Figure 1 (tube, rainbow, N blue to C red):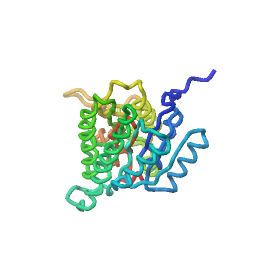
Figure 2 (cartoon, one colour):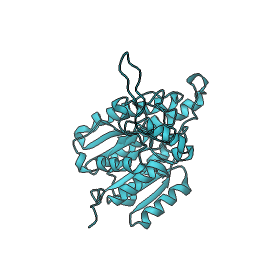
Figure 3 (cartoon, rainbow, N blue to C red):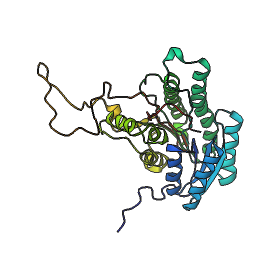
Figure 4 (cartoon, one colour):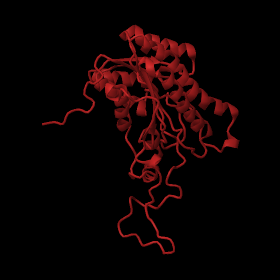
Length: 316
């Protein structure tokens, strides 16, 4: 007897939009939403990669529409939402997960144009998405919107990215309050180190280091973030709005040292094997200088705060 699918069709008859759907968390979320019964509208700048994701959703029996979109362009975002409604008749959920930004650098070495790019893709892109998603949801009785961020705490060398993600959290709280009594819920997802293409490309050492920075001593999977998106889009989370949900293996709870010592006593020798190859306690177990994992979207609006492994790269 097979176990029941945790993503059983709890979203049957619903329509969900995923921005930043061409790879990583966005692509995994598109598949999860389709498996849960939703028709998915996929947006990203990379038309070829986006088309491939849509094809795979349809091959698995789902409904998918790919709409190449620059989420910083107001007219393009308006067309995206209109295509969703024209094609499927409604919009019930949105996951605003697209992001962009410069490579890691100390703040004083960051060019103003690079900082502006991070703000445009994160804060402006999320604002434009919500601005058009919310009216579409209101017309059919409400919905759920989510975003993906890494703004719960600072990360060295990522001034533009972290500022943009922190702005998304503030924007989400305002939107949640504005529409709490009108049936639209807005939340943020805050992933920790997730094994997306960025961290995979960084190699095993980076993956190990990222995993050891979490109390669970492992990196997360994109599917684990996607499952949270599906839940926040569903009626099972109907009394939740305005929150930032960490999906980070315990990072946001605090620090879990690999070895402890007692005041005035030498640290005891390690009694077991290292936690992994060449494992050693990190000087700062809370973060490595990596790019947060962030990708956004859905009729339930959720934002995600993520530290993703690897320098900031566009999630188009």
